[in-house]
Length: 96
Image (cartoon, rainbow, N blue to C red; front, side, top):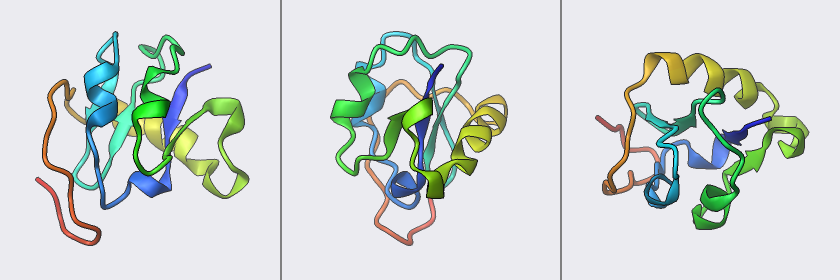
């Protein structure tokens, strides 16, 4: 099991969760963050730090966001690690 970043992160990309992750499993996409499932240790530290409630344990991902389980796995292989705080995006703004 791993934690999964879901739809509420899209267009926000808060990095509070990144700072508390003990295994540096977050990856940075253009519009949101992702969790590398093979590196996540299920510690639950990130979930409580997310200001938009976008992070769930895989079995608790709401049905309407189930596709984010596969998306996190796919994008974690493509996106670079992120370990530092960055300014969040304004909803609808494109990120770098």
